Every structure is written in C-alpha cells, then in structure tokens.
Amino acid sequence: MLYVLLAINNILNKVILWLATIIVALMVLALSLSALTRYVSGIGYDWFIELPPVLTSWLVFPLLGPLLVQGKHIKVDFITSILSDKSKIILRMFVAFVALMAGLIFCKAGIDATVLYYKLGQKMELEIDVPIWWMYLAFPTGFLILILFSTQMFLEEILNLKNLKSKAD
Image (cartoon, rainbow, N blue to C red):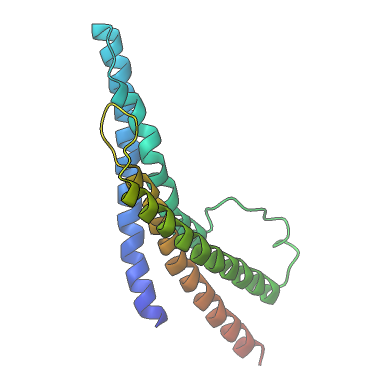
C-alpha cells in the first residue's frame, strides 16, 4: 500500500509544484501588468489586482501535504537536536497523525462550505465573475492532498521504526 501511495504522491507532488509555480507567475504577471497599464494609460484594470487574492487559496492549500512530507513547513527544530532516533521517529509519527486528523476534519468542513456556496450560486464582487465556491474548493482539495501525504509520512515512519528496531537487535 505504501508503494502505491508513494507513486501517487510523487506524481501529485510534481503536479502541485508545477501548478504553484504557474500560480505565482500569474500573480506576479497580473500585478506587473496592473502597474504597467496604470503607468502607460493612466487607467488600471481591477481584475489584475483582484486576481492574486483569488489565486492565493489555490497556492497555499494544495502545498500543505508536499511541504509537510519534505519537512519544509514551519517548524521548531530545537527539540529534535536532543531526542534519540527512536524519539524523533515517534515525534514525526505524532505530527503525521495530527496532520491526518486535521486533514480529515478540515476536508469535511471544506466540502460542506464548497457545497453551500455552490448551492447559493454567489459570485465574487470582482470585475471578473468568479463563483465563490471555486475559491472554497481549494480547501477540501488541499486537505485531501494533506491526508494522502500525511498517511504516507505516517507509514514511512512506521517502517523507519521497524528498521531501527531490527538494527538494534
């Protein structure tokens, strides 16, 4: 099961990092074009300024899982410097378990919010018509990805613990 999950998550990781790069490029391009059009014509287009906040949720939430597994999330490292190898593995298992539980809870909440806004049919009050549910869809999507990656991390730490025990024997 772990190897299937690893294969899926490796593909997801590449796609997510590629999409994140595209989103950041679009954000920078939109803000640059906004400044350029205001400088050249004296008139700006609001949607250039409104696009980055709309894309932010699609940048942040899908990256939760890959950043967790790669250890690139915000963390405090001073405790790991004093822990034994076994304690470090148990700590990482605990972190993965908490992330998994949080992912399940927030994925469910995100689905509920997305469905609610989809049924309401509301659109953001922007120059471009973007349905509100589209922004909320980033929440369950990101937390579903977090569930997959935290499950991978938890299973990998179980294997690390088994390997550590076999080396000690």
